[in-house]
Length: 311
Image (cartoon, rainbow, N blue to C red; front, top):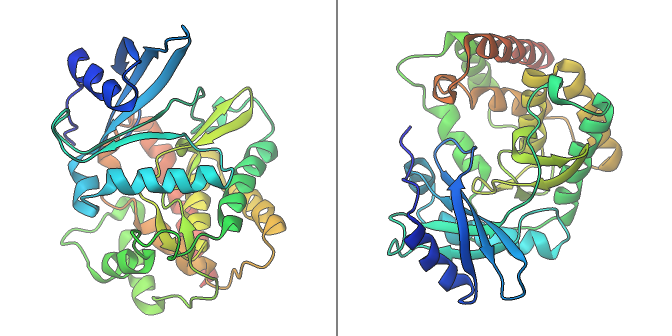
């Protein structure tokens, strides 16, 4: 997948002038992460001598096809979430003009931390890890932002109906796509039993940052949508099953429900299957080693088997 190019130091200086004319560029460098977006870490000096650490996100073609105004919308989402006390990066500047860098972009504060995407990286008990994930997702959902707060966001059901109803010419057997699609064709759409609220849209451990065993921030809000909280819950359940095992997924669900007991889980198997469908045909884009791909596919199969048995 082609990403936008890294900006030159001159372009980074132009961006900094838009944010704060007093900022002076120290250095900029590519930042790992993002499938289609190009990330750049920026260190700039304030007049006080302190260092202002920023991240530039240049959106890729896939982001812009989904939402041509993704930069402005993610800026608005981050501003809304920060006002509610969520651990998200502060949004500093959104630019859709493509006059400095060639695509719409967003500049945010840098959060010092690391992603934890498999069990070997854990420095704390698994239940502590899943508990912190559950707590921050419950905090997001408890904020209960609705269409009135974010009228620029789409409903996940619109995206989901399109994905479920459109069968590709080639199905991904390695991720059980034929069985998942056949089941979803029979049971979709799920009943809407929970109030539609603002969702992360891609909530999983790889979109969280950790420091000394503590969750320091939730990042990558370009897929934010409105809809049933089960969408976020089930996507996290799938990713946890793939990367950390079925027990992690079950523990996360139990911990979330203890914090949000009013959430109706009746449609959980249906949303589990929709979550499972999202990776079909895409894993080859991730640059995985054969061993990692085999491990993730095995976890995905276990997740799908449990969801099919529960419908």
